[in-house]
Amino acid sequence: MGGPGLLARAGRYRIALGVLVLFVLYPLLDRNPAHVNAAADAAVFVLLALGLNIVVGFAGLLDLGYAAFFAIGSYTYALAASPFYNVHIPFWPMLFLGAIIAGVSGALLGAPTLRLRGDYLAIVTLGFGEIVPTVFLNLPKYTGGTNGVVGIDKPVLWGYGSFGFNPVPYYYTLIAIIVFSVIAVLRLRDSRLGRAWLAVREDEIAAASMGINLTTTKLLAFSFGAFFSGFGGALYVAKLGVVSPEQFNFTVSFTILAMVVLGGMGSVFGVIAGAGILYEFQTLFLNDLTQWAHTLGAAWRVAFLTTVNFVDLKFLLYGLGLILLMLLRPEGLFPERRTKAIITERVAAEIPPEDVSAAAGATGAAEAPPEGGS
Image (cartoon, rainbow, N blue to C red; front, side):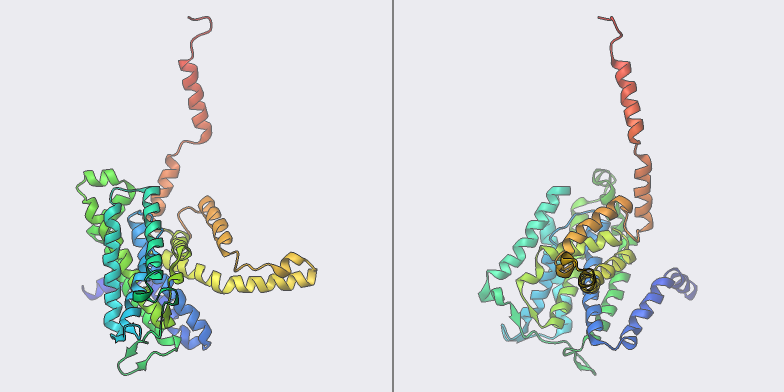
């Protein structure tokens, strides 16, 4: 590609490039390690949301067990780089191997769900999401069981040394992988496969009649979505140093799905924003909100405010937030242009309730027998 084409693309994504520069400078502007550590954790969820957006946002396949692939990527690195098996394979090849194994697992999950849609697909994926952590929990000889795996090796970078417990190198590694992932996802979306995903999302029968191979298209959606969760899983446990089954329960899948819906299904940059907003909301804002409530409760002598803990109520708040979002902005906060246009067309095509009543009344009047008639 020539220089003018590259400059045109850079101009198209100038806001994203500006935000990227801010993220690169963030550890230099904020020297608080706790804040950088929280930003690195948020980046893991951004990576997960990008992967789930392929399955849910692009292909329209409702996946409620996405945390299972996160667990597979995490355990792949943990078992291959820890004292548990006394195997210490370097981090960088395991980063890609964990992603590949998670991607293959995604294809295996997709295979029995090819004929399922909607609620049935959601139930099957939910079951898979519960089975994987349970298997890790009940095979202590091979996975550590309840205790999990501890002492996981830290990444080592040539010329830098071990990452150790310093959150800054993890943060920059995640930023680099997110940039790579965004470019890959955008290329996938604009490819022939991406257009096939969008066609399947809108009308599966019509897509099949146009010659799209539903089997291959769905399996690739599950596989690519799981691939990115493998990246996130390996980095997550490498940073944390420990892994256990309770880290991958249903609440993780629900939280990632809520991030995708909040940002806008199908919108790459919207999903990134949704993941960042929701993660900071649950880790920072809810703690501050609880402290403010306790302070106001003590000042106003309101017992409820002095005892309430909004962190424990986060899923209640998520539910209320999603209800409001569906009522006021069903396409998400930062919708993708095509998704927004489709939803707008659907809303415009709907017959208002008063027109339906009028049409039903007219039909009933036309079909009703005349008075006195036989």
